[in-house]
Length: 100
Image (cartoon, helix red, strand yellow):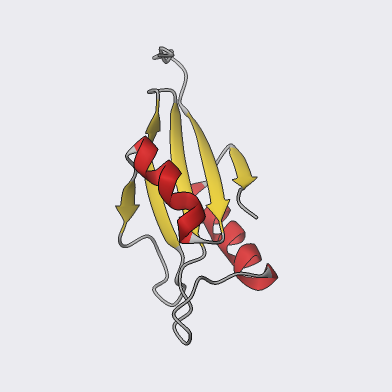
């Protein structure tokens, strides 16, 4: 386990996934908690937070489900909006686009 230097703030890493199934194993493995009220309710994005080895703050964001079709939101528009809102609201030091 990595010991975090108490004098330096932890770095924040954002991982963005289109599909919930892609993110689920990592969310479970890291024991992340879902943020129920993270921002604008008109956007379906889901965010999960926690820490990794007491050295990094982790934010995982998924594109959420389509209110019309009930399936994962995929494509460029949800990806761009999710990335923008995640970076604006959580201000990560590093943002990684994960999944397919």
